[in-house]
Length: 376
Image (tube, rainbow, N blue to C red; front, side):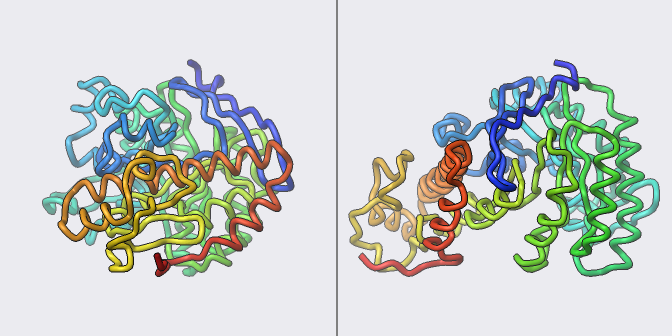
């Protein structure tokens, strides 16, 4: 598949919400779509078969982590990420930029790139736009990200400097890219500043890449600030290209993101919450450690058709949690990922049917952010 064949078909819209189809070498993605995160070439606690059973169609893996361990050369030797982790459907890798800036205690940024210390063993490493692309080409995901600088959201002066570097690095990434079976997305940055976001959207769009990512959100700003930046970007980004909001994945954020024109999302949240005994329900999150579930015969969510909800009670899963059995994390992860995948399918169906707005209003009214103490 040539890069020009990474085509995005916009099938339906309702106000700013979009339903589309993005063609990739490993299959078509029905958008809007949520991608579970497989940081280390695995979605934590789930086998590929279990992940497939949730309905997931896209998985994200992390360039920074795989570069450090086991190494991009080894992954390439094993046939690339799809073969290495036995995931046959589309994959996306980030550039490593966010992790370089968030995980490394010691880093030095210059116009050429970033020197950073490994969080694993303290060894020093260097990422440039060219090396990030080289690593991602060895990993072999369908969608790859430009190397960017993720600035703290409210520091105006820093965001101005970082934006210049991000744009220069994007040009270098585009020049360095050699594989035609991978789609490079540029990343729009600019913190919570509408004029910087507008400048970045114009620059990234001018390069005519297969898609656009939106970075630097959900990194400490308020929900209102995030929504404002998405509202600024919607009319400025090419309508015929997919938009990917990086690192966002709570149920309410998915609905609000689609409402503002986003097509692709990813987040570690569903499996991270599962490891802390927290599960999604249509009316908010519940903590299955709570004693109120000790004799609860219901599934986590009686509207859910996932493996966990079809087969097990809250009482059983709470027992696993209390007993510190690893199956607890697996079952809650299956449910949480399934919940988000099912939510995205319902969102898509509502857009196609022309009733997304009432669906969104009803969902957001019912869903309560944060843990919820349910009674039997």
